[in-house]
Each structure stands twice: as structure tokens, then as C-alpha cells.
Image 1 (tube, rainbow, N blue to C red):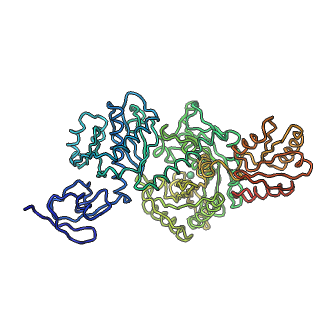
Image 2 (image 1 turned 90 degrees about the vertical axis):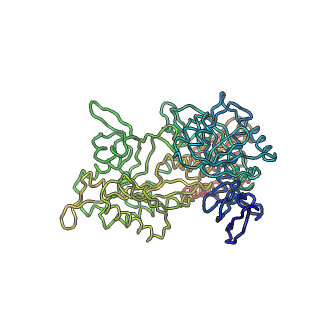
Image 3 (image 1 turned 135 degrees about the vertical axis):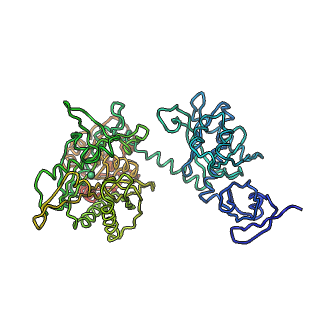
Length: 635
Ligand SMILES: [Zn+2]
């Protein structure tokens, strides 16, 4: 008679089963929807036999463990499919993040995107075939033996501890190892899609060889897969790089990688953003300044940037002196502060600058306007007495709130605390972190704590906005700093005629104007609200006799401060309207006999088929209102 053991099921009930029964058999008996399980808390795949009395748990495809297991299965199936087409392919360790999988391989010729359909087809056929996956658990040292002919996977194994356990799976000619168990039932892999082929440097290092990469996604449910594919399509349509070209907003050149060139349309939007914030800051008594782009290296050594930031800085020599392009505006503002004797009556002093900074990023990290090497920060430094810290942080947050409301951004707040390479006394840090936390609590913000992610000179509040596709971007920041005033020996004369040290608050609302513009392009899908639109009104003549009338209207709109353009081309009317639509101009006016004789317009707003009749006076009033309200409804 075979030996029995006792298992404890997830609901707490106990059962006796034959020793070495697999989790798969137990799962099938229980009719559990599991893709992986655990034995006494240890995560394993379903082929694992239960050898002793144990507590069991199961994870279905919706769980975090289940999602990982399914993605790993798809990645194994994908490698098998590639092997069928390219028997010589050598695979690096596959990667996964959330639902996305990346399979990198060395192959003679670059893959063509056309292969994706064939690979998908092959995998789908396997899902229905009666084939099984071989699985084994072993130590990393043992796995090195299995992969001894694959230097790419060996290098990934070499990063692990030799005694660590890995899960090794084989399907057809493909073999892969994972740190977590994979799903073994082929049918669980059915909601996947292969998205693209591209080149990818081995280990992500630009100095290594270029491998071929297949990217795919896998989900537990069909609806999730479809929703994700919709999302990808929508984000592709909204891509700021694509729209930046189509709408003539900005460009890049190999002569200055990562440094944007703004065309008239893009600069118009940026200027409007700047004007808007400039007016708002003036209302709250911020004083705008401008400091040099290039400053002596001594200054950066003094500020601490040299020690903490020099790998991201650009340097230059002028005569025999070493200079650096500023990566931040703070030291320049400290020099302005220090230039005069300051009294407690001068504080708070709110110093603002639209400051162009340069920060070196790896070429692989560059991403359109979202990650650049030079950008304009809407920076401000507020010099305060200690008892003014909380009121000034509250004011900075109020301005941030006013700005983000205009764009319809919801946002989340994060408090980042002392990093490992912090400067200064721990007691000061504790005090600063407590002040920031208190202001947030007093203002009723719910916030997350981001342990160890503060700046080297002080803790900070970061604001993360959610765009129209629900993606999160970190933009605004408010940072408290006790270090820089000390480094620069900043002082003021207090009420008792004693010398005292101010505290510095660094803050930005947009963060980077360039990056914020990139986010806005995607957020609005290029259809900017009236106040930001590079061209606000398009005038189109019906035929040649209306040219003079359009010309006159053009001058009139222009004089009223409206960004207007005219299309007098000898083209079909339909084409001219469509072109203006494609350029996402908020209002299109078609000008013919009736419009000119009656001074009325047939107004088409962007994205709508309906035409609204308005008198000229009504339309002008509408435009004024739109410019003032800064909302996103055209009417
Ligand atoms: Zn600063």
C-alpha cells in the first residue's frame, strides 16, 4: 500500500492524499483555477509533488504570482517558435515587467516585423497541441551546466548566487530558467500578443553587441489584452514625437543629441506656458531673475554639485579657468542673495527664473522631450526665516494646485526622505521631513512616503500628475534645504540685530517646460486648448473672389491678438478644411459671399462636424472668453 500524507488546503480543511501527488492533481480534484501553487509558503510550479505533510496554497491567473507564471510561459513558447524559424538563434535571458515580455536573441540577420504573425500563429498552434513542458528545479551551479553552450544565458546566471534555486523549463528546442515558477498548462497562455521586433544592446549596454528583440504582452483575460492593445494604439496616436513632427512643433538634430530645436509652433506653446506662470508668480510676489549659463567650477565645488552631480555635468575651459554649464539654478540664486546685506524684513524672498540647464543623460535614456540634455526649468528659490517655512511651502503648493487645475490634471503627492549620500546633520533632516509632512497633513493632502529618495541637500515633496491615458509623470517639486545657505554662508540680520541663517526652498511647478510640453502634447493628443494652440483660427476662402475679404479679416484678427492663419491656396474647399483639421486648429472659418456680405461666420470647431452660425461680434467675444478662461472646451 502506498504511503499517505496530510495536506492543509487554502480554506483550512485537511485531506489525506497519496505521497508524491502533484499540485496539478490536487488542483484538478479541487477544481481550483490555479496556475502555480505553494507548499509550506514556498512558491512552486504545478508539477511539483507533495512529499510530506504540508500546507498548500494556489494562485490563479489574476494573482501577481499567476501573472508572472503566465508571462514566463509565453516567453518560453516564444523562444520555441523563434527556434523553429531560426534554429541557430541563441537567446539571452528573457525579461519581463508587469505584462510585457522581452526576448533577446543573437541571430545572423535582423528580424523583420513580418515574422511576428508567423510566430504568433505557431504559438497558437502549440496551445492546442498535446505537448508538454519539461520542468526541473536546480541550483544555479547546476543550471550553468544545462546552459553551458549559451554564453548569453551563462552571463545572467553568473550574476546569481551559485546555491540559489532556479526553475528550468524546456519546450521543444527552447530552454529557459526563471527565478519564479512558470505556468505549465499551455492553454493559460492564450491571451498574448507579439508587438514588435527591434534591436537591443546585450545587457542594455551600448558597448555590447546589438541583439534582436521581440516584445510581447500576456494577460490572464481576453478583455485585459484587448484593453491593453487599445491603450497602445491610443498612446501611439498621441506620441509627442510623432505629433511634434506632424504639427511642426520641434525637431532634433544629430549635431546636438538630446537638445530640442523649437519651431515657431512649439515655441508659441512654450511661451504661453511661460507667460501664464510668470503672471501667476507675479501675483504672489515672486521676483524674476536671470543668471548665467556658464559658471566657474569653484562655485560647483562649493555648492556640492561637484561631489554629487559631476557625472551629469558639462564642462568647458575659458582661458585657463574651468567652468561648468549649470545643471541647476540654485548656486546662481545664492550669489544674488549674497550680493546685498539682507534683513529679516526682506524675507521671504521669492526668486524665480526660467533657467536653461544642461544635464548629461546616456543616449539610451533620451526620449523626445520627455528626457533631454538641456531644458528650461521654471525654477524658484524662496529664502525664508525658519518660522516661515510652513507658510511658504503651503503657498508653493497652492500655486502648483492652481496651475494643474487649468490642465485638468489630477495629481498625487509624495514625500521623499533622506538618501544615503545626504549632506548635513541628521537632526536637521528629521526636522525638515517633519515640517514637510506637517504642511501636507494640515492642507489635507494624502501622501506616500518615498524612503531615501530625497535630494542630497534636503527632503522634498514631489507631485505626480496623471495624464489622459492615466500615465503618471513627476513634474512639480518643493524641496527644503538647510545645506546650501550654510555652504554659501548666506545670512540676514534678525529682529535682535543678530546674524541668522535663512532656509532655502527650491520649487518648480512644470519642472521642465520641455518635458511638460511633451506631456501636454500627449495629454491633449495635439489638440491644444485655445489659449495654447499655436494657430487659433484658420481662415479659408471659398474661391478666388473672396481673397481680399479673407485678407482683411486676417488683419483684423491679427490686430486683435489672435493667432490666425489664412489658406488661400487654389485647392478644393474640402481639402483645405481637412488640412486645417489635421493641424488641429481650434476654429475654422470658411469665408464666401454670405460671410463677407453679412459679417457672419459659419464656425467649425476642431473635432466636430457641426457648423455654428455666429456674428463677427459674437465670435470675437467667444475668443476673448476662451483666452481668458484657459479651459479646454472650444465652446
Ligand atoms: Zn534649486
